[in-house]
Length: 405
Image (cartoon, rainbow, N blue to C red; front, side, top):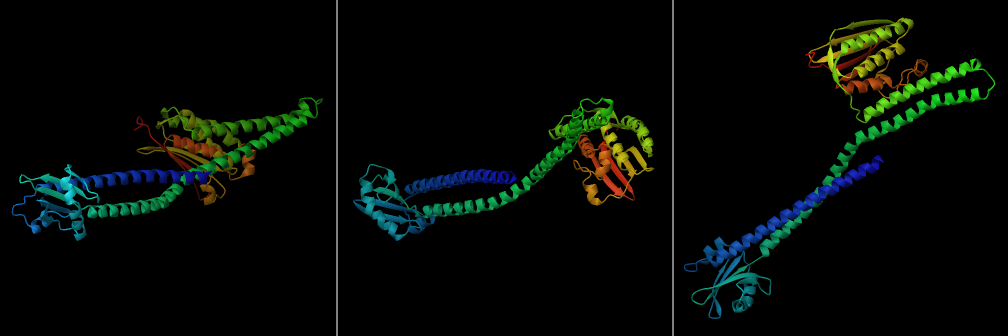
């Protein structure tokens, strides 16, 4: 699919550019030909008006290049003035047609030998005839056409190479997005398959003992309920990410981020105490941002839940919320086992988990940090992760509201 898209993009670009080039060349060629024709007509009219009295070949040749002026009187050529670019064979051709031109009623036209002419009768009965030699202009047009064709071919070849390169570069983000989407679908299918398999297995066990009491089947019922809740949570997270990818519009309003963080901390304290973890918080008051209160609370909850899962027993979690001149800075740091740079680089990838076994036992599905990143991006902020000196630190930077400023 990606290769076909790349080819179609390249071909479309080449066709569009070729059409533009061809149209431009046609316009240029038409303009040049029209201009040359106008020059021809002007030169022939000037030559017809050229004063014969005192005229010299030298002066005429200096004024005209592709014109021959003939004065025809008493059945013969009485005077001949030749432009500087006129060749002898052209003059010989003129003498073959001059008599028939005089006899013709046309004041201008083309001879049998395709020579362009214009004539006028003088008061003394003589005829002044101007012949135009198109050889030089035709040669110039031929050269112009030749160079235009060369430029067109070189341009098309060059652009085809450039277009292929640009198409490849343009497709890279789409290709990466396509790969991520395929991987996302595969991972989601795998994650949903596990609880569904457990639910099916438990249901089959219960169905195979129809005479047993509900109490005797509670082990399988509780297991099924747990997997159902896990699957519901996964579906909810998938739905959130899918809507976000589709450009979900979120209602924003001036929100007291300090209150949101304080509420999440109060809710989580009992859970940390139960798991023998120490939660320390330092929250500045009345920090306002333009945001969605529900999503901001979800962001804080995700970061605290992540810290709860990966902090060793008797470890410490530190949450701080401060503000600078332009931003609110939320930091959640926790004691952690060693995390490599490569692992840190993938923490915000969907379905990525550091410890699969621990993640399963604590109900995680590897989507929390992806959702956190998307929430921060929706609020025009930035979130980063860093492991240093035995601590895992997540830092979310969000722009302040005008009210706070």
